[in-house]
Length: 394
Ligand code: NAD
Ligand code: MG
Figure 1 (cartoon, rainbow, N blue to C red):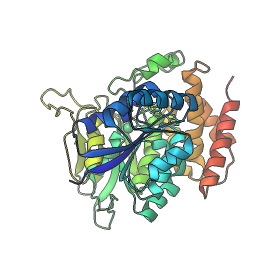
Figure 2: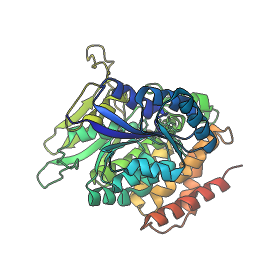
Figure 3: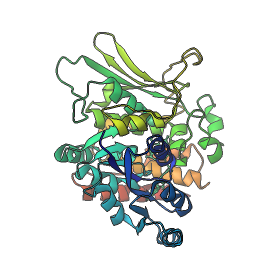
């Protein structure tokens, strides 16, 4: 295989770190063009030593200055850039083949879209970008010839179980026999908690996911099941299916990562240990396969696999996500924006856990925003929805 050149957006996060661990398994196969982070210059320095990228990008100027000084002191050639324009540049540079889009939240939209517009192989972890601007994003990818490969474990599983063409798209021709997708969800740390007890949970409890180690925002999303609402919307865009064809099942063991159902009664599933290095390695090597460092699943040791429908009363965050996708227009964007504000407030100790879905519901009701038709519309609606959500905070 030809050496590939890669940019990792969000290199210091959970997905970024797992991506670099996979690269370390394959010395000589990938060249790192750029590593980016918001403010963690100390970790980015270590990553620059190990992977010698051409560029390191930090969003915060002070962190960039510290990294610049540290790299110069060690005689390392990596050039330090700062700000959003630099993110767009390293996501779309002509010498880059693949972009790992692993910034969390709406902050990832512009650089991820830049990669799609530039025709890159986009390894998409940043689900919020797709929820905010799904049609625009998928249209940009089609227009430029960009291949979008899902990193989210559920969507990666589905991608592996669907007939996919050379452009990485679901070849949904007549007669392919597709009937529906089933997204699995672990249920998060509060799967069995009584509703009343949820009011008191702390950010630390919400971030202690039973099966996956992830960034704080997605950990809270998993605890509210908003993550599954975002993923339902993500699946509709990635595979061009309506929300009615996407079902969600709680599967506490996180071994079956998702399933595709066919008309003849067949269900195809992808199974594996819950470790993001598997979908990351799959997407990096696609259409080939390569080792990820993850041990194969021992089915004789795998616990009894359970599946049950989600409880939409205790976890209205998922119901709201489905309703937002059914409503269409600006609703998915509003759902995401309100959630980002509510989760940040919860993590800062400003509001309780149950306020997260309550704030989303309020903003969805209040925001009378037109369907966004352009990137400018998306950014304007997003800002308005965030402002409405801010007004729900104490
Ligand atoms: P994280 O919080 O661990 O890391 C986020 C990364 O984004 C960091 O490198 C951070 O520096 C960077 N970042 C944050 N805000 C930024 C900003 N304003 N500007 C520029 N950079 C910024 O998050 P994560 O858990 O790695 O998740 C990343 C994305 O992947 C999210 O969209 C998440 O939903 C998705 N995802 C994560 C997992 C997982 O296992 N962690 C699984 C599936 C999908
Ligand atoms: Mg997921």
